[in-house]
Image 1 (cartoon, helix red, strand yellow):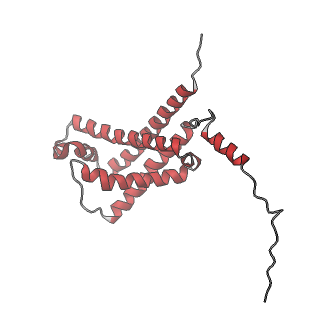
Image 2 (spheres, one colour):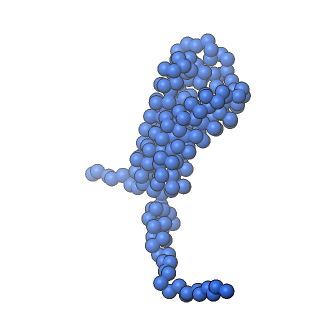
Image 3 (cartoon, one colour):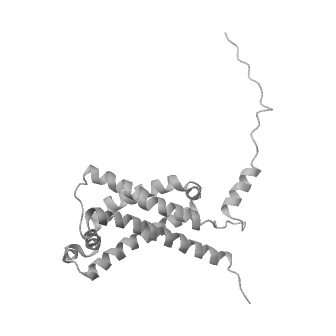
Length: 193
């Protein structure tokens, strides 16, 4: 006897797929160009966020730690975006704008919250060229892949109180709303004095 997946199993599978694919794509395409541009020592800097200056010694374990931390951050960011998309339905309706905004938010949070609190205590001002390049990179290489992954794989919407999807409930409510009619509008005559 073959059992079919229920709506809850499908939603969980969609969530894991959206987060997994979005996080993996964002992690891969955001790490490779930076490593090519600045060298593979960037991975040691990522590990340095957790273990500090000891990361400069290198070694396979520290490289693996840096890669793990980078992908952990990307999967975490994808999970946050997915969770937000379940509550804020416009996120899935406008993945391009939402992804651009989300990527910029990721850049700002990383620069002004995560890095100063890391073991490296990065509080130095960022040169303007680096800031804009980093913003562009996070918007295009992190925000958009995650947004479109969640849009594509996370299509099932959570259900509301009636058991219908929230999107269906909001459409039903819109259709039941009284229509604006200008046909019975009383005329206002203005006198020019």
